[in-house]
Amino acid sequence: MTGWLIKGASILGRERADVLVESGRITGMGADLAAGDATVVDADGQILLPGLVDLHTHLREPGREDAETVASGSRAAALGGFTAVCAMANTDPVADTAGVVEQVWSLGRDAGLVDVQPIGAVTVGLAGSQLAELGAMAASAAKVRIFSDDGHCVSDPRLMRRALEYVKAFDGVIAQHAEEPSLTAGAQMHEGAVSARLGLAGWPAVAEEAIIARDALLAGHVGSRLHVCHVSTAGSVEILRWAKSKGWRVTAEVCPHHLLLTDELAGSYDPVYKVNPPLRTADDVAALRQGLAEGIIDVVATDHAPHTLEDKECEWSAARPGMLGLQTALPIVIHTMVEPGALDWDGVAERMSRTPARIAGLTEHGRDPAVGGPANLTLVDPAARWTVVPSELAGPSRNTPYSGMTLPGVVTATFLHGRPTVLGGKLTESAS
Ligand SMILES: NC(=O)N[C@@H](CC(=O)O)C(=O)O
Ligand SMILES: [Zn+2]
Image 1 (spheres, rainbow, N blue to C red):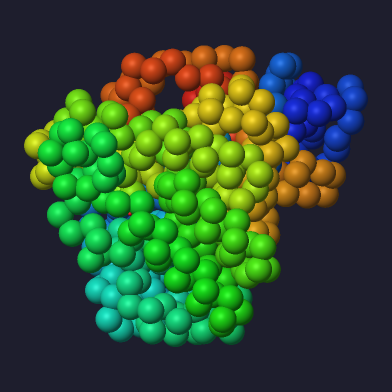
Image 2: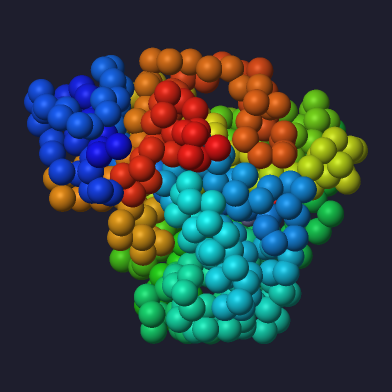
């Protein structure tokens, strides 16, 4: 096999071109390239994007391999069109030392389907009281640049300030799960009319917004980088707008489920809809779409959060929060943003590839197809539709909120460093 000729794709939704991939790089781009010895991939009517990059993936290894492993999550990622994922630190043991982040990094390399970039914990054991060895994780083979206690908020403002100061030395970033814990104790869903009707304890928008405002002020004061995980409220978009107007180094992500689903779904009492932060109101959904379209929200991140049947198919209050996301992220973005005309393909590349790659410092990712550039690429058929069947998803977990839904956008091929991990919508032989 001497190479691949991706034939007739529309490059980021613009001009059509053939793209020749050899030895991990793009070696030719133009009309009617000769295939020579290369294998032709027919891409007529399809969109070629820089490989997608996820800033927020829970891979569950080490510790909860019954829910997901680095290898199974890598399969889901490749099928979803991702070429790099950032693995959250809330594993067991927690990724709070050079040893654990190197373990996750090398498991990712062994799986070989996606570049797995470990995120390091901000505090020891995610306990929120003592800074973890951030410098050692940055200096490790995993080259950690993003630190997060995700699942928990770094709620102590003094500790948050110190973390921001510490990572500034190596241009690191603190990714905050914004949730003031004293305001969400016992919370089961978004606090509002629906929680009042259902009689469930609420998670008020202010618990998120207060932390984002505080952290933006801290990041501005320190001159360091803050990234806000899974923004979910209209008020958060307004606070981010203000923080950006100050010129502070603040970025934010939104999850596909917060662009589509609302708190009304909690009325089913089906824990598949339980997630943290919770599904909010239709007004929040509209504001998040608008914020993403404008670039106030920089990134779409999946918050792929696999859970076992035991942890999900139980009473609402006992269920763990979280939803699968890797294989449905691009289809949900097409459905909520591209089809209504709120984002074009260049916007998709910006929010799901270039910007997340830049935030994570992944220089071989997030680059538009160009001769001499890396061949980390995603090919999507935007007209094709598929129906989500939980048992057909990669990985052992089944907790997708989109079961039975027909979604637009099939990832037909994913190339990682010039090698196809997905072809014809399926994992390649070497990949499966
Ligand atoms: N989002 C979730 O509901 N759950 C995440 C943690 C998190 O991202 O906060 C998980 O690890 O399961
Ligand atoms: Zn979180």
